[in-house]
Length: 141
Image 1 (cartoon, rainbow, N blue to C red):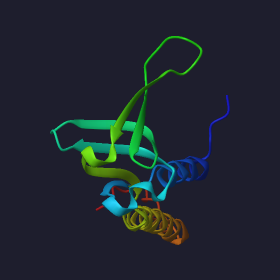
Image 2: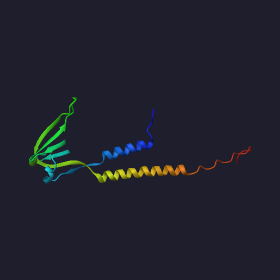
Image 3: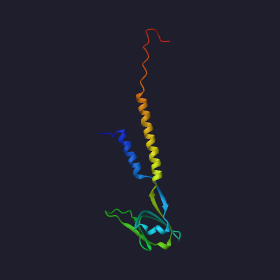
Image 4: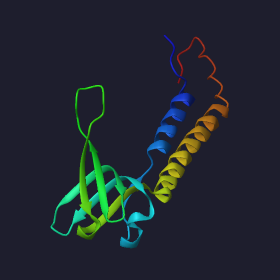
């Protein structure tokens, strides 16, 4: 049975951290709703007080069509759809990667790993103290 080396495990953990990143929910200004034809991870609050979360949404000239994946046991993915007029939206937010936070967390993690490696090397480089001389046949004081 092969075991992954410590370095490989650390590299895998760092790549997992970098892939996930820190995300934030950022509000999209009303004039930028239709700037992109499709957006992922959308949250919509309507003027009627309803709250919707969509896996992705498509924007038309006057309508947002949201898609949410259903949990089914079939082979095909099924999506529930909902069309909302853009005039009925009070707040539209999208989840995005916050590169500042991701860089900060990654930098702190990388610094901790480097410090741990340096302290381990420093401990390994120090010579071992000479063993004490053996006691003579008389009892040691």
